[in-house]
Length: 360
Image 1 (cartoon, rainbow, N blue to C red):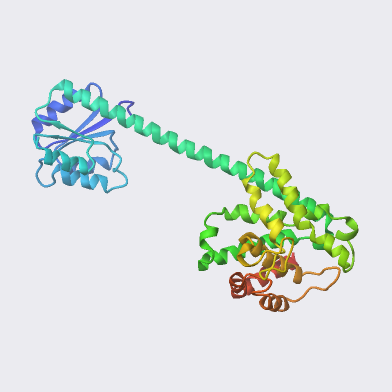
Image 2: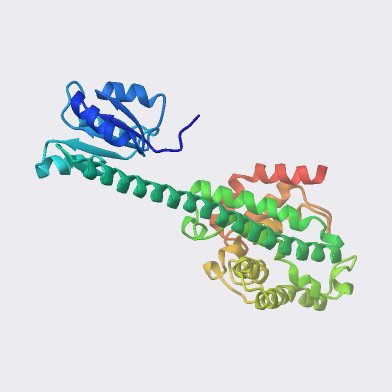
């Protein structure tokens, strides 16, 4: 049965010192006395003490060698060590402290001094462990809270995304597929160190999840246009293009009623910029090149790829190879050429996701 008392190991080749120290400490602590560093390490295989009192000047393995070995072992590095020595020169003390000792007690020592030093350092160690435990518990609480917040944010995004798709049967599954393509494209960018600086400031999981709202503005488009089983007139297309600005407005409204709304920033940017074109001929703002936020440039590629490879009222689905050629032709005009090159490099991975979705 484990004792509730603190455990102390005394290490000294002087048997008289061992005997004196053990008699002083035994009343209050569970005490073990060993005559060498070798015996100490043998004992440490059986138990872990709360404190080690360690002599400096010992044959075979001196105290400095012992503490170095203790501190270089993960199993023993946290055990506090107090040197007990007749050496009183500053150089010896500094050397021991640099190696990880908590304190020095000089020989000969009084009973009161030894007990008080041990008491103080055991109290300090107990406080350190308690603080460490508190810190671990706090990290776990923060981690759990963060997960709860992320789950809530994801639920909000997914619920709104479901609302969008419930109104737009024509593009059913589009949101889920573009999420998969977007995650793949971002992973490929990171792999090749493209746009690393910008991506390093993002929560990638949150960015991908936020992409579900890139078409949220479609909830404000009339059914007669949104669900028209055929090609839109020029006038109708102009109205459909407004889903980008409607999307920005909708997300801004949600932000006003959500104290923690940073998770919506990616969504707002994507909603308003995924139809911009690299050469400035896109909509709604006619942004050009890197004026277009990276979120929008990424979404532009995966949005178009998905639209091309699926049926629409005005066209049949293109093959993967045809879609790739269209995107390739659009590099530098419609699409960010650097992002496009990454897409082309991993086109077979996009094809695999596309085929998997068609087979489900």
